[in-house]
Image (cartoon, rainbow, N blue to C red; front, side):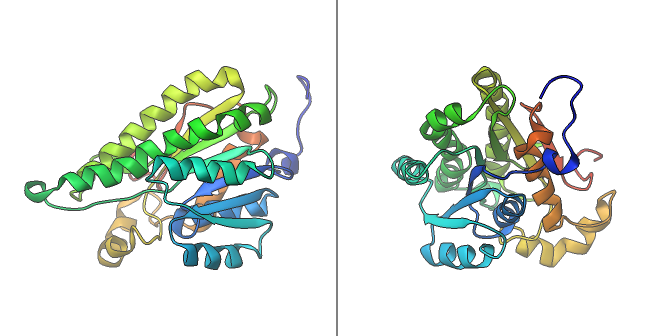
Length: 263
């Protein structure tokens, strides 16, 4: 496309022919993103630790497009390498969505070492390991006109101070936001964009207990007066993965109804 030419609206958000990997794609935000990418035309691989959850999610998502599920424990470096090998064995990857994550709530006085190791391994190390493993295929798939895309799922807990005692979680997401910026600077010249999405409250297993207890109050505190819906997360993911988001890199996008950004 040359200067002065414009994509149609359909072309701006079309992902036909693209291949994406969504970690933690069997439920919650990961499934919302996987569904959105499938509906935009991408072929999608999802991954999670539980094989049964993978099979169930693959069956559910198959109604929207070409999807497969690969079980993997991404808190382990070797498993990140194995997953990368599986997904690239049949072709390239154009879009990597690092969504798999862990949270740990516990009082300051008893917050254990395991709460740091478990959360940092999955929330920070795993995205970095997957970028390392998939870098060759992301580089080969991207062009100046149509870069490959990395989308890291952070959190508004890294933008404002959360109300819950999740010290390692909020710290890990702040680290992931900064890693996003660092990688964006390095990988931009290699035709790869790197952005982060910072979700607010969305219905998910991780948020279930909080929303059950405080959901109405959380919605009331948001300028938009509601919690997130599946289309809200699918929409930002499709934007970042498509032609519409091709000139954006190094950004952290809060998708939170204004909760963190107006606090």
